[in-house]
Length: 349
Ligand SMILES: *Cc1c(COP(=O)(O)O)cnc(C)c1O
Image: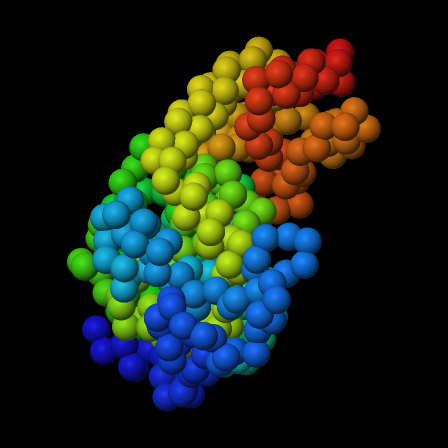
């Protein structure tokens, strides 16, 4: 793939900011290069030095976990940062567009709009799968990115791998971004293993869900090293704080947590679903490969309002395309899920 053709020229040609920590990489020495405060940080541990702009320690850990190479990894301040940078790298404002498949994650649209990029919406089918023929028919010279979220938020289901492969093969004039934020909860293999097959593929993952680190803000983009270099060039130099880097390094040493918490939450999900199934006012519980479920019910708005009054916060998705009367429920602890069931019963009683 001739990447240069699909990257905006001013980005391709950009000379990046060179930080003090880029120019000298050693750890020992008298550091008089970055205008830091040598006295420390006051009453907290020392955070007075700028962090590693390339976050190598975390990348080495992730490369081993994900079985990829360190130069295929970009780290962002949440995957939301990667979404924004990818749009800015490829789309020319008020001319190019991204393709999204509603109902889906809201940030693709917000990020595009912030950057004055048009949005082409090709809705999912009624069973929440990709409308492959519509997508392919709508690709034109202004299509730069196709966002595919699997397992999809807010519907919870995984999308057909064959469909995704068809789009990857068909769309050769831009990039297909597969958002795998909920990958750990699903039994599917990650598309990271297919990066060498599809140079136009970019995979997003995050530590915000199964890894339980939403507050630290760390998202990953996996792609061809050429694209990773471009992302590194346009990111803010120190986009991942030192505190985040050191806590993530520590958290990733626990090799089991993401896997076991995904199992635990998947079991809790099964239990919650079996209890919701007994309630006639719950019309549909959509199949979920994520740590949440979408349920269609009678009078979603009133149920949602009632639950809030009872201090149980869910997400009303009723106004979203193809989600009328539907509420998205994150899987909580067993006792939290039971409280939810009790309140729903009381509401419909
Ligand atoms: C939660 C979520 C993310 C994660 O975003 P972060 O910025 O990494 O917290 C990304 N994509 C989807 C679809 C999500 O639901």
